Image (tube, each protein chain N blue to C red):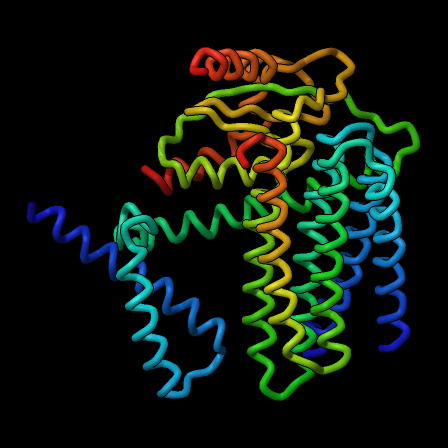
Length: 125
Length: 170
Length: 85
């Protein structure tokens, strides 16, 4: 029991630190795509480990403890599936909104595909 | 004819099972009335949704595949923790050592669900973010481009996930 | 226990202020959405943690609903940026 409690404290601290680092990444990065990268990874692992740590802490602290663990595991699975999906949709939306990615060596394989799609749409009109 | 009938029943039971497990998890109680209500309501929901919920039915539940699913979860969690330390290292260094760009590669997967899982996993691994998937081609925003060649990009980014996913969806 | 709670909540509060600066400054609409998404995930995690500290189980259900609504909101704005709506 005491081992689970210390594991829960460790997970909660780790989650808070990663949530903070994700916000710092959003603050410092140069363009939208790098901001999405920093934000989505850190906020996913941060929220997952903070919520799971709280669930473990609730599991050992209250007498019917299992609902805490089951409900928090549902939230963890939902966050792990939904957060990458929404960031992927947002990155594609930003590209279709003509926000050019910040590059140093001009590597952009998606540019031609995007041009072809636009030409096809104009032909259809 | 016979084959399609069996697959309809197996799809229905698979959907019923998943929805009922979700009901149990949300109520967190095994009172007899709640379980009976859950069985009834999840059957009605699965009657309306089983056609678009699954395409394989009960075949997806074999124990060998379950072992590979657990292996995939471990591979994914290790990659997720690595990705976070990678982002932390970049964010905390004063000069922001990045060289971003968008690369492309082809994948051998053909199931839509497997492609969705692969794109999600790529988003959560170190320094990569999936921008678009068209057919079998993945377009990936990469934080530190080592080589714009698609073969190198595939081996660096997606190989470890695709090997396990090909065993699950074979 | 209470010191631990105060340390955790202040780390996350500083992060939320940083994300809020990006939300105000962000040159495009997508930047603002990313900042808002990060803030809403901080709110989800803190709501679960606050539910443990105040011993209220219902906070977990509230944070689950908030997670679903935030996901739907981000998807809607992404569709709008694509030109789908």
